[in-house]
Image (cartoon, rainbow, N blue to C red; front, side, top):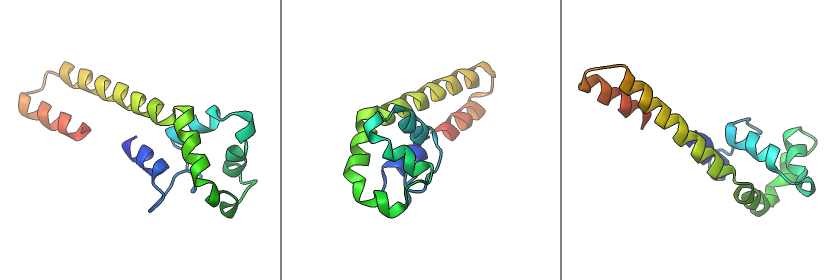
Length: 106
């Protein structure tokens, strides 16, 4: 999910919005957009082309912020992390193995 957040807000390398990648953040954004911003859904449904939205970076960034997309994704990520910690603690592993399992989640 960290990668999904980064790839939604990054415009330098790859951008999940521009690439129409269906990730948790982009799907949340799509279901959260107000009616007057339906161009976002039109782009994802390929009714608009890349050149139709490239100049709308400030609008996209504002929509991401106003919709709570990043907050929602961060909370979901944290919930999964704490569930993982709970599951690992219930395995009864030696501390060495438990530390390795926890390190994988970082």
